[in-house]
Amino acid sequence: MNVLRRAPAIDAAEPPAPPEAGALAGLGRFPWPRFLLATAALLGAVILGVAVGPASIPLDAIVRIVLSRLPGVEMADSLPLLWRDIIWEVRLPRVLLAGLTGAVLAMAGATYQGVFRNPLADPYLIGVATGAALGATIVIVAEAPHSWHGLSVLPLAAFAGAIVSVVVVYSVARVGNTLPATTLILAGVAVASLSTAVTSFLMLRDTTHTLSVFAIVLGSFNTATWGEVIWTLPYVVPAAVVILAHGRILNVLSQI
Image 1 (cartoon, rainbow, N blue to C red):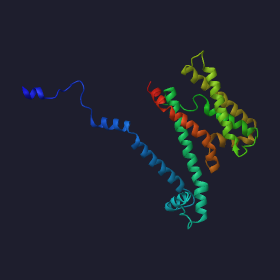
Image 2: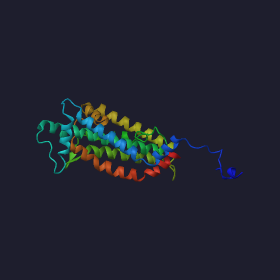
Image 3: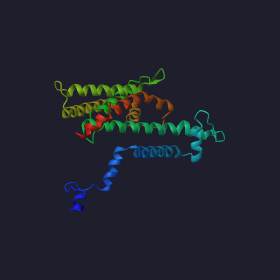
Image 4: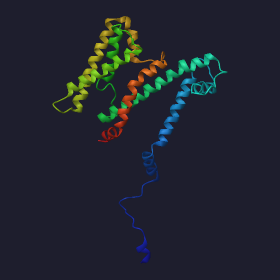
């Protein structure tokens, strides 16, 4: 009887959790291993992107060229000047701009999915992407200067087009003091279709700028420079700060 009294009680309604569940819960509470793994994968992709190209450059030379740009570090004196120009002036800006663009698109996609509670949501849903394309197309077709006092006009026009598109969609979708998600999506589809139609009309009206419009709308990193990387920062940094500050709210919305 004494042995029975000292035996621990077993709750049959709650079987013990398998060890895999505890491990997954630990990963959810401690994201640093996943963060470090993703960072290592990103660095590997950057190194691979810089290393691959028509000109074969050894990997150790690439590392020395990049590190030599740090203050007080000079490790590339014995390397050919052509190698240094290829890595620093051609390949690295392209790779960094491509990575920055991918990061911003991923962040925007995750934000849309959290707000609309739909894993298929994207920037085309409420006409942001098509509005940006229309803004850039207007500048190209109007033959306006693409830079003003060292500042690129095309990103400004695309940003303005995206903002105007969002304002129009919200104005059309608002019903009194409410904003139904279904109405917002339908208004976004309508505005996106209108923006696409106007963009196509401008391209067909002046075919001499068709290739330039396609290059802007579809995107390209062939002519990426450090200046274009810097031009993106005024748009990327504030947006990233605001989105990351509301990360908890977006996570809560995605669970509703």
